[in-house]
Length: 113
Length: 113
Image (cartoon, rainbow over all chains, first blue to last red; front, top):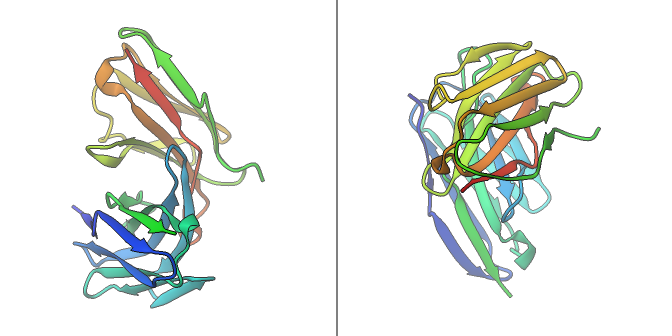
């Protein structure tokens, strides 16, 4: 059974700092990996989708990497801003059929002005 | 594209009452997922459909929970009778193919008193 772990559970950084969020998964036979952002009391917003054949994806100040063989992904946020404060969730889809995403419990990020 | 639409946004009901949550997936998407989010357990998959057919309902906690997808544009999640421990945020998500990732609705916050 696929399990997804995110470390740290919470992170507080000063504005302007570069930071890395970590995600690990137990079964490396994934189809793709998706990073989401969730603001308090809101739904999930997709940030980046990495296919299993890809090593990284970039969108603006965000860069996500994938090392499938070691079961790890990182989300790098450059020059953090208070507006980046949210919970970041990592989710993986395994290889067999159109199977659902399995989520980590997220990292709660606070960027302090 | 209006995205995945869920209703109601908030529901407060008394223990023992029937609750029906609704979801309209993105037009053209052929998979639909129901997730439940709590502080303790994070996001958990309840059930998912491919082409309107239920594929895996092993995440449905009890027989009190049921879900239907009568057509490609509508799904319901019903709880009867509801209990206080059912209080959570319920999310619906849809996807076309896994290559394109998932899109989530804004969720229904259910409170059972």
